[in-house]
Length: 374
Image 1: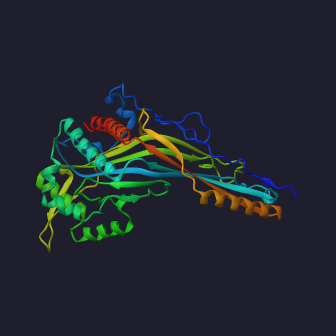
Image 2 (image 1 turned 30 degrees about the horizontal axis):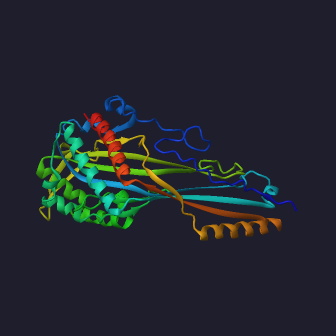
Image 3 (image 1 turned 180 degrees about the vertical axis):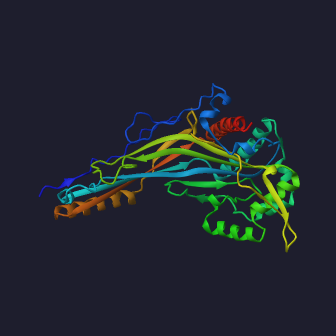
C-alpha cells in the first residue's frame, strides 16, 4: 500500500530583530511603522484610537490610580496538515497528518529587573501626563490617601501570570510596589466575582476610586502597557476548515513591540450620593470614559537580543519520534495516522537594551495619546 505522508512539515524561523516580517506567506499584513523622526502629533491620528473624547475637555488634574505592565514571557503557535471538510473519504486513507508547535520564551531578564521596569514606566506615565500641561497628583501623595489604600486592598497581588482569552501567550502582570491589580480583565474570574460582590456593599475598588476622585476633585487615569518580545504564526491560522492542508509550518519573528492604552475617569462625569443605610458617600462614573488606545504596536528599531538558543528537550524529540512511528503504522493499516513535533526557543535579551527600548517606545505612545486627548 502506498502511504501518503503529509510531512513536508518544517519549522520556519526567519529571525528579524526590531522589525515586522513582510512578504512572507502566512504572516498577517504588516502594521504601519512608527517613525521617530516625525512628530507625534503628525502620527497620532494613524496610531491612536480615541474614544469618548467629548468627556475629556476638562481633564486638568490627574491621579494615576491604576498602572499595569504586562510583560510577554512566552508565546506559541501551531499548524497542522489535514483533510478538508469536503474532500472525498479516500483522501483520509493511508494518510499521516502532522501537527507542529513552536514555543518562544523570554530569557535573560530577572523578576527584579522587570519590577523596576514597571516602576519606571508608571513614573514615565506620570511625567508624560504632566508634560501635556495637566496637573498631576504625585504617587507619593496617593500612597497615603485612605481611599487609594482601600481601593488597592481589594485588588490582586502582583506579579502573576495572565493569558489573554483566545491567546497562546503568557504575560507577567506587574504593578508598582504598594499597589495591587484590580482590572477585571487581568485578575481572573474568581477575583472579578469577589470584586463584583464588594461593589454591592460599596467596597469595590471602583467605588473607592469614585470617593478618591471626589475627595481630590481630580480625574483618574488608568494606564496599561503590554510588552512583547516575539511574534509567531502558524501556516494554518485563519484557513477555512473545508480547505485541505498538505504542509504545516510556524514562522517566528523576534521583535520588541509595545502596546498601550490610557483611560481617564472624569470627575465631572461622576455622580455622588449618600447611601441610604450606611450613610457612605457613593460615587460612580457614567461609564463613558475617554480612552486612548494604540491601534498598532510600536516596534523597537534596534537589537535587544544577546542570544537565541534551542531549548527543545530530549523528551520533546522522543515524543515526536514516537507519534510519527505510530502514525505511520496506522496509515499502513489503511487508516489515518498523525504525528506531532515540538520546538522550543529561548530568546536571551540584553536587559539594559530591552528596558531602554521599552521605555522609548512607550514614550512615543504616551506622547501621541496625550496629543489626542487635547
